[in-house]
Image 1: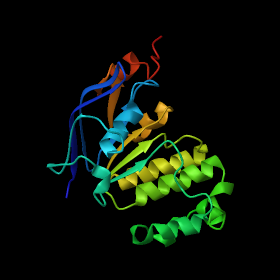
Image 2 (image 1 turned 45 degrees about the vertical axis):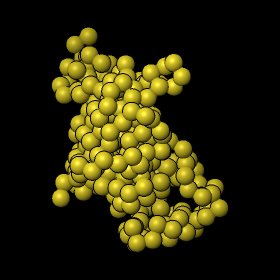
Image 3 (image 1 turned 30 degrees about the vertical axis):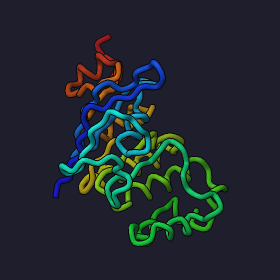
Image 4 (image 1 turned 45 degrees about the horizontal axis):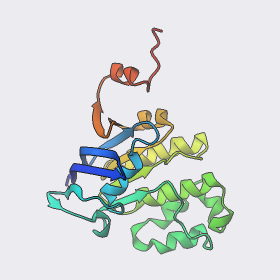
Length: 222
């Protein structure tokens, strides 16, 4: 079954500043949507509104045709990797996995070169890269229809970035995925659809020349 998340008429103001203006976005199973845009344009704001943890008067969000004010409250609908860390620091990695219960394949989790080394270490003692990798793997493997990833590659070693990209591609077979990251080269590499947030609105990018025009790919002719 192909799932569809559709958002329309999303607007958001912070004081006198309008951040988002009549946003329309559709994400389907199999989509890996790269959300591009300069710092401060509202990428994280948009993901939080789509997830349902940031309020706005102006939004219409539906999942498989059913309107939803708080998608995160629907079990198994959306998983969201925020920029900040979310795992309890006093627990070990193995204990964290136990918390997610039947939603995860515990054996598959630790059949992993990095995680097999950190299973008995408390979260507070993990490096930033180790912690981020664990969080990403949990979010991607959670039973959900859609996954939002905000700065997933931040702090990861190059070898783990490649592993995460493969995880994203594999999970997109059964999920719709939207991701954004300040290292847009990784976003361009893993995504199969691209949108840019600028002046409060979204623009679909399709051709290589458009990426060059927006400054995301260097123009080799120059």
